[in-house]
Image (cartoon, rainbow over all chains, first blue to last red; front, side):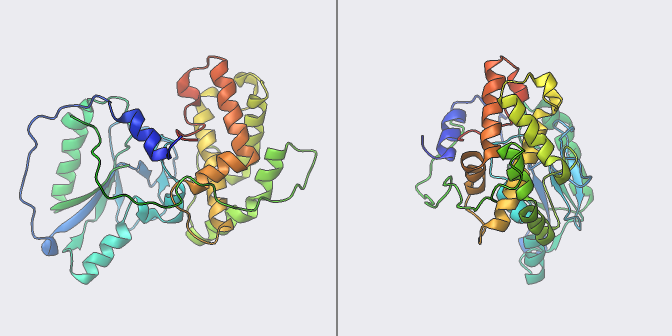
Amino acid sequence: MGSTDDVIRQAVNDLEVFDFGNTACTRAPRLNTARVAIVTTAGLRDDGIGAWHDGQGFVALDDAARDLVLAHVSPNFDRAGVAADLNVVYPVDRLHELAAEGVIGSVAARHLSFMGAQPDHTLTTLRLDTGPAAARMLLDDGVGVVLLTPV
Amino acid sequence: MPVLVDFDERIDDESDLPLSCSLPPRSDTSLPPAVDEALGLRAAYERTFAATRRTGVVRLGGADHVADLVAAFVRIANGVPIDDAGIPANMIGQAALDVRAYYEEAALALADHVPAARRAESWFYRSTHAGTALRGARDALREADVSRGVWFALVPTGQ
């Protein structure tokens, strides 16, 4: 058997994926003035609950929170790295370093976590409800750029 | 349209190779080896927790209950019906993630470096009694035609 990555790649390579049609494209603000938020699908929670009960919804994470729990349901990714350093899936400390260096303008007050193992591959709820709600929340927080960490 | 796209760059490292972590010697021979092993790793687990102040053992009572969860998986692997094993069927996957998190966090303390991807996972499933118990439990549940949703989280793809 090849590496785990090879095995998983073979298993998912022919999965039918949802066709989103035309992809919206927008010009990003200058990075050194932008407020940046993390949007992760690692299934992180700040309430200590180790299970994801939010379906295609999301959890808003206070920027200062570090005692986060990985509630992702899939066993098929390396979890030890996250145990060693939360920044592996949630690079919040790295963002603050970039802000201190002037590379980015500022770090958002809130970041968002979805959960990446969704059985409904049409992602209808996310496309029509929770996704727009998440975007609205980030826009209200003055976020201009998101750093997506897919898990 | 392909789901994945191949790029020429490739990172070759020691991913997937089991860590070489010393397991504790047997302490209580009246216990199943997997349970005794889990208890023996508590100190290593606590060292990682002290260093990170975070843990993934959060689903079924914390580190104090890991030995009980391992005992239940040993029973399932030995053919005890799931309803009599000591873990509700709808919590089997959560229990497996707790046990795995406990062992992987202990491995971080036993190794002198942060391991490459899946090395701690491989050590757990290939080198420990508890990992063997989870494999056995998965196989027993599958052979008993238990719903895949119950057992799929016990052993990750590739192990």
